[in-house]
Image (cartoon, rainbow, N blue to C red; front, top):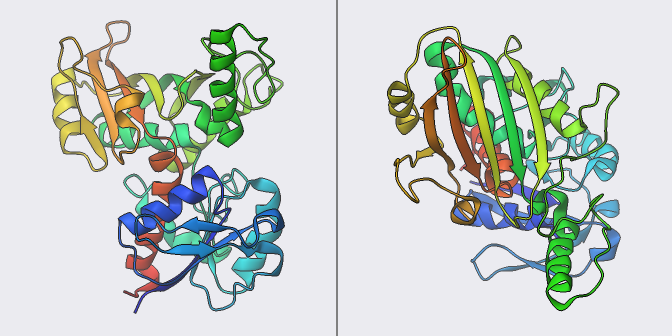
Amino acid sequence: MGYRVAVVGATGNVGREMLAILAEREFPCDEIAAVASSRSTGTEVEFGDTGKMLKVKNIEHFDFTGWDIALFAAGSEPTKIYAPKAASQGCVVIDNSSLYRMDPDVPLIVPEVNPDAIDGYTKRNIIANPNCSTAQMVVALKPLHDAATIRRVVVSTYQSVSGAGKAGMDELFEQSRAIFVGDQVEPRKFTKQIAFNVIPHIDVFLDDGSTKEEWKMVAETKKILDPKIKVNATCVRVPVFVGHSESINIEFEKEISASQAQDILREAPGIMLVDKREDGGYVTPVECAGDSATYISRVREDPTVESGLALWCVSDNLRKGAALNAVQIAELLGRRHLRKG
């Protein structure tokens, strides 16, 4: 016996990826529904490589009664309306928006990092998926924190345009083409030209000069991993279609060498260590696109602190940063609580 699963926001980048990963991982679905806004109603989306096409249902009229799990990839505004409705009708919501991440009654889950926290989902019947840049970082930090206790993290991100949705990907493509043919470039989705450029600004600015994306990395890391860890983040949008990269400096309470860290990371769940000190002996966003792992390279000791490491972390933000993590949460929920399939 399997689950009845609804994917809300099924026509967007992340929603389509959720459908693909559910099929790829053979999640035990007795029934799958693709749900989206009224403008997408009646269109069809693929259920991965199964050959099955799903007709999109209108979220405004969708009844969640009798459905086990709803994976939400619809953005904060629709989620604010329909996630509580689904939860009240007995359907467990796994939400990819930022809406519930810092709600104390909603667990914020990365299955490789804090699986036990999922037990708190019954307070609201909602589970939150973290920010894409946070998700891959905490997967990398968790085994090192267990071994040597992290005091402080300084991270600079190199985030792909797919983190801003289809509009971000379209803008990079259109601007790149315009530059090659000599046409004028007009930013629309981003605040400045993104093609052949980098923009140190993701989400809105806060009073302290940080951006909301940077605040998310700080607050979410503390909630998922350890509230005592100090985090400083600089989040940058780069002209890459898919795949977020991070340069991470870590200060520890206990001594840990680069070789010890490599051994730990090599065995850690969800991580692929590719760290050869030679030309090309590291992973870039192009190579991680379409893959489920969080890749770690360039592990080395940081001589500027008493016990520190620096490393390079790359992951497909549409997968581990969003869709894959949501499906892994659904799998964890099934194993620990729903027990079907």
